Length: 325
Image (tube, rainbow, N blue to C red):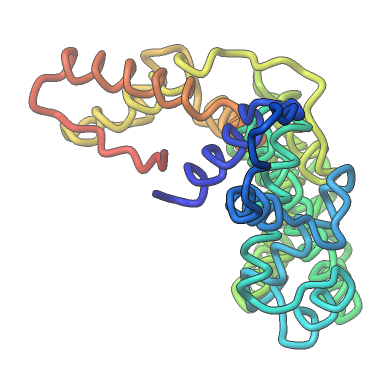
């Protein structure tokens, strides 16, 4: 039984324990032996929140992150010691009891363990964003974002976005008063900086600027996803397609590739361009990640439905999409 299932069982047990009514001792009947109450007392003692407040889930999620992981963004011996001291954790065995107890309390508060999982996923995404922002600051301090011959990274990304959307390069250069030799030097330097940047900060800023410059039919959705991701918030725009439609587009391209056909042509047959698909993917990817934990059973059922549809549409062709359930 995995952690998710064991926590669900613990929550169910906690919710479904009947309220014990005080027993009246019948005349002439001896009182229950003290050892008869021992199992119940032991179970109550095992349900231990230690120093955690179940109304402060973020502090608990941060503690889990440090106690359960290492490396960048994870814990260290020092941070784990501080957490154990702050929340009155005696040892690792006590931590496991406390962790399951707090998860159970959160599940009661939020209504289900699925919603708690989503809350924790959103918290982790926020941590990732904060780490990336720190990398960007480091890169900026080292001159990584200094414009190349007057062309900023964002302007270069917007140029490239226009090219992908069909604008003529010479027209772009004339409009920006940039000659071809200067443009080639700018491209070479930005590409070189991006390849040297192992933190991914330059590529992240470039990708966001590229999509923000989109004039495609789903450009506004990509921009909303980028803004929501940066702020670690829910999106304000409802999805432009259903999850079933999105996964059908993915399957159509994957099956086309397996048959030796062009995925771009498959998109074209569905009335989409590569820019449309890139922008739509940016929105739907964030939307799925933001709602997956709370809806994973429903999402799995939708995916299986689409998978079966395409197995029937293209017999013998397996999309092999890497979707983790």
